[in-house]
Amino acid sequence: MDIAKLEQFNLTYLKVTGTEDGVVRVVLSRPEKRNALNADTIEELIEVFSKLPRMGARAVVLAAEGDHFCAGLDLVEHHTEERRPEDFMHVCLRWHEAFNKMEYGGVPVIVALKGAVVGGGLELASSAHVRVADQSTYFALPEGQRGLFTGGGATIRVADLVGKARMIDMMLTGRVYKQQEAVDVGLCQYLIDGDTDAKAMELARTAAQNPPLSNFAICSAISHMQNMSALDAAYAESVVAGIVNTQEASRDRLEAFANKTAARVRPD
Ligand code: 1HE
Image (tube, rainbow, N blue to C red; front, side, top):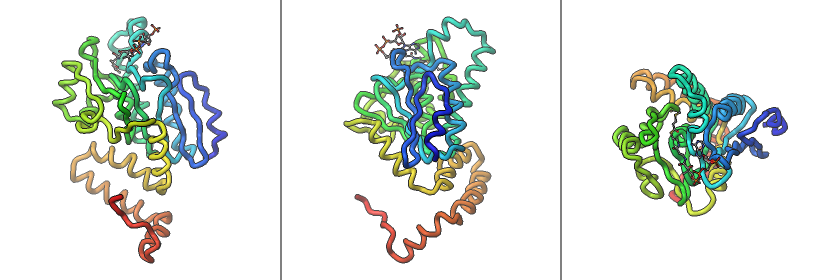
């Protein structure tokens, strides 16, 4: 991808930088407010995640400045704006737009977590394809305690990750998950001792080596198929596989396997 094109973004709450291998870093840059999501940040996420796939990004790392990944909805903005129900419904539609661009955009999004991943911050994290946590990371849905309800897709994505019963418990009681328990219930796929940013970059670079068409299918088709009946999903899978599995980019890889020069799948 052409890294220079990333300069076209005019951003206040995000920083976007590219690397030579097509991995783009998107960094939440409002640490003084614990990266709380105000309306402008959501607009910036929509802008960035709408354009990056068409700009040729091969993978994205979503990271954050400061000690906390994201404190969720900007509660102060929400309080000050005195929104009516229809106002907040429109706020939610913009959140959905941003997070759908991430989940269905066809480019792998790896999120580097730390500290609080709460409320809308967990909705944001659950829209990524891979979640990497460290020992400081904790997950919660404090909506019940705040007199709120999730509005950024948690009822779909967080329920998908942890199941309905756990999500309801998190919202009713403010239960916090962290460390190995967070992995065990499905909130993150990696728990590391070191820097989640470095691990997310490593995973993104690995994913970026797959043919873009394969990644497109992995990072959009699976999500779409989950929304379909089993019968329709099986049909859609055959159509996607028909296209992906006959692509030019897979020929060399298959030939390498056939002539025994390709790496084998080993346990370590
Ligand atoms: C904020 C926010 C925020 C911090 N909106 N400004 N989310 C929550 O219920 C989580 C609310 N936040 C917290 O519980 C804590 O701030 C943290 C555990 C994340 C971090 O604690 P700490 O001690 O490091 O920071 P702090 O002193 O609480 O906050 C530092 C500043 O960030 C302070 O601003 P300041 O101007 O007084 O310095 C805080 O006001 C500000 N800040 N979190 C606005 N969330 C689509 S519906 C989704 C519904 C939800 O997301 S509900 C969950 C909301």
